[in-house]
Image (cartoon, rainbow, N blue to C red):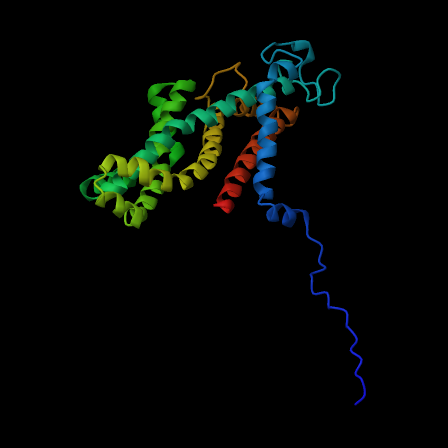
Amino acid sequence: MSEQVLTARPALDLSPTVELSASMRLQRLGLNPTLLMGCAVMALVVLVALFAPLLTPYDPIAQALGEAFLPPGSAGHPLGTDNFGRDVMSRIIYSTRLDLQIGFISVLFPFFFGSLTGVLTGYLGGRVDTLFMRLVDVLMAFPFLILVIAIMSILGTGLTNLYIAVGVIGWIPYARITRGETLAARNFEYVQAAKTIGCSTTRIMGRHILPNVIAPALIYVFTGMVLAILTGATLSFLGLGPQPPTPEWGAMIAEGRQFLLLAWWMTTLPGLALLVVGVALSLIGDGLADRR
């Protein structure tokens, strides 16, 4: 019998040769490109707000009537000036402080109150839940902005009244979100086990249910911040928010609308700043929702 010579064949390379895109590499590392982009932009916006005195070459409310309507690119005024000769870049930067403050403070009370209310009504059920839902139905029958304007017309203008008006209405989405999550969570095994070992209702809601249903409400916080900033800008545009000469994006847009053909930058640039912040917060919310 002749000897058989066995030759080793090279192993087939079955590994994919497709080059991964940058977004796919980030996803493999557990990083969300949408979330990273939103966080990067918001970090830059927050830094601008924090270091506003160092970044602004002029007082945002100082008038120089001899330099009115200077276009962007003018010497000493990169973004131009308004009808009173005030530096537009300085006013936009200082407006960032105020509008971020409006967005942050306006969601604090609605988030905490709405989340606690949603857990309470969702877990207890019965008449408490029925009364809650009827109240929510009545409030949701009216547009959000109309109710805020109605409350502001009663309380008057100013930041404090703006926070009150938004807080009175803004808790509803958080309550509805956590209520829906609680209705499902109260039948889970860990809740039934807590009942079996004799945990009180307060402990079950606070230690077992709330930490497990709060994530969707936290994600909605960023949408709430966008809504609060847009509401503040709208009220300022209507003259119900911070009063002149306080720099605020909505007020700047309102001041420049009558000079739109003469000085387009007075309305366009504050509008772009509002757009950038809104998109950045929306990207963060979408990125967190994708990671959930």
